[in-house]
Length: 168
Image (cartoon, rainbow, N blue to C red):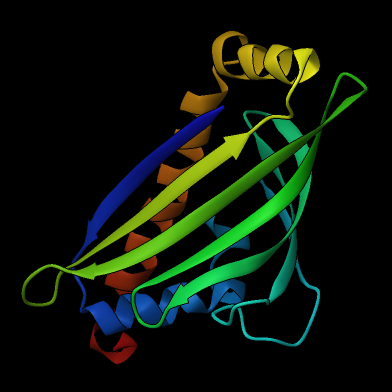
C-alpha cells in the first residue's frame, strides 16, 4: 500500500534524543491529536525485542486499533514496531499489516537526525486492492499518514529542544 520515511533535524545530542524516544509513554499520546490510547501488553521495556503494545489512533481520519510487538532494536540507534491493525470505515473492517522504524542518527556536534520509516500493506485479493486504492487515491491517506508522522516528529523536536541541557 505504501512505504515512506519522514525525518527531522533536532538540535540536541544523540543520547538525549534516544532517551526521549525510548520513553514512549512520555511522548506518544501527546504527540498527535489522532492518538487515542497506548497500552503495554507485557512488562518488557519498549526497546526490547518482543515487547507488545496496543495502540488506538486515527490514520487519515479512519479509526483503528493495532496490536503489535517490537521486532528489532539497535540500542541507541533504532527500534521497529510491527503490528496487525484493524481500521473501520463506514462499518467496514479491514486488516492492515503496518509498522514503523524510528531511527536516531548523530549529525555533527549536538545535532541528531530523527526519522520514522512507516509502511502498511493491505490484504491480498480484490477487497485489499480496493481498500488500498480507496485509501491512497480517494482518501489521500498516504499524504495524511505522512503528515501524521511529521506531526509526531515536530512534537519530539519541540519537547527535546525545549528541555535544554538537563535532557542529556
